[in-house]
Amino acid sequence: MPIISSPQDFNVEDLYVDLRPVLDVPLFLKCEGFNFAGSVKLKAAAAMVEAAERDGLLRPGSTIVESSSGNLGIALSIIAADRGYRFLCVTDPRCNPASMRVMRALGAEVLVIGHQDANGGYLASRIEHVRRLCADRSDHIWLNQYANRNNWRAHYTGTAPAIDRRFPDLEVLFVGAGTTGTLMGCARYFREQGRPVTIVAVDAVGSVTFGGIPERRMVPGLGTSARPALVDESYIDDIVHVPETDTIRTVHRLSARGFLFGGSTGTVVSGAARWLAARHAAGGPHPVAVAIAPDLGERYLDSIYDEGWLAEHFPELPAEPEPDLPDDVPARLGAPDAGVLGVRP
Image 1 (cartoon, rainbow, N blue to C red):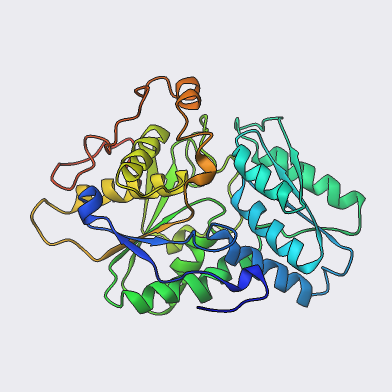
Image 2 (cartoon, one colour):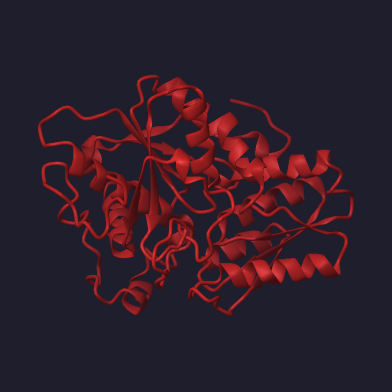
């Protein structure tokens, strides 16, 4: 076992779940939640902070400011506490209460912005507030995860090579789209390595990241109400949009088998299952496919795993969600709902 002195020095990089016996889906799930931040965001947070220090932007006494729906905020809270910075997280009402409590326990200040933007989300409102804060205070430094190249570089140098080492015959990679840092870092790596890997982005229905129609979204993590500057669709082969009801059904099916994952993972797994079912007939050969699970599920106990929250926000679901994927997901079934899957042929 390693001996560490900084919390960002520990991260389990080589743990995968084989979902064939769990969900009857030919997919390996890369688990990114086994570090002190509990999510894949620790990599991006560390890379952005280290670059800001090298560039002289962060100095003793600086305050890091960032817009986050939860996971990056927790990662930055940990790093700020370790390195002696103040941290202010600007979030919105959809942030899991548990995530806010974790950030505050680590010494961060959490500011909740309740004003929705033009697309019915909160991202543009959060970013505008961050801009105002940093314009008024010279010691407040915005890392800007939505446009910071070190966000995707963390995955170009870390996440993608780790997958490549474990699966040298990889054929399909499914990555959720939030800021698109993980997505763009992995996509750039496999493209520049000359590896014939199909990159499938998984997004939430209601997100505008890839030009979708803005709709209500309640599950934090994937999806945006303002297109991130990091997006470059030339690196992406296909896109799957997943309804949040399918996200919830999927995480409950996983938890029924003992795997408690977060909402982003439910979205990615549901989208990957639909994509694979649509393109590979039952009984035939399946491609070597990997999906990235951004986090674990403990911070979602007050939301997607809570019966009261589900009854309030998703009354169309059963009071106790069925531990099943949508009817058209298992690989033995045929083509999916064309309104949900894939905008590319």
